[in-house]
Amino acid sequence: MEGGPASITLTPVSAADAEGLVQLRIEAMRESLERIGRFDPVRARERFLSGFDPACTRHIEMGGQRVGFVVVKSDGDTLLLDHLYVRPAFQGRGVGASVLQDVFDQARSAGCSVKVGALRGSRSNDFYRKHGFVEVGQGEFDIYYMRP
Image 1 (cartoon, rainbow, N blue to C red):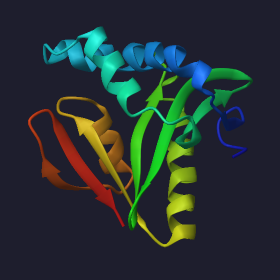
Image 2 (cartoon, helix red, strand yellow; image 1 turned 60 degrees about the vertical axis):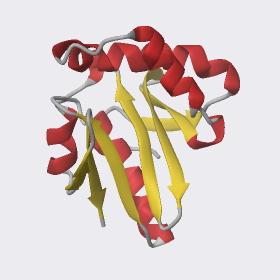
Image 3 (tube, one colour; image 1 turned 90 degrees about the horizontal axis):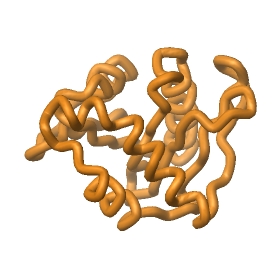
Image 4 (cartoon, helix red, strand yellow; image 1 turned 120 degrees about the horizontal axis):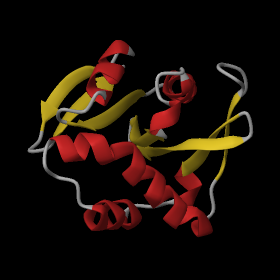
């Protein structure tokens, strides 16, 4: 993926990148989790590592700098946007929107929908709604969305 703000690219991840991705996830989620009283870096690490698959994960790079990561998994007739994290200093610059467009292109090519879950109270809910996701359910801590 090229283009978009300051040339955003997606690059492969290896198993050796796991700890760095955990730290980025914690950095990106910290504010939302603290706001609802659920910030626990140990739980965040374990939860991410339990489903970590380098083959489904890509670094998000902007101007040669790693600014986030995305995890997209095939789930039957849908693509699961399992993780999309952008470092707080790079949020609001179109990085996430550019990555979402790439995910939408993958889904369109495969003829499937995209599903995602977002933490209740997180600004990511507004982000996903703005990009065409529709709420399809709720869990104890998350809201679930689909985009046809």
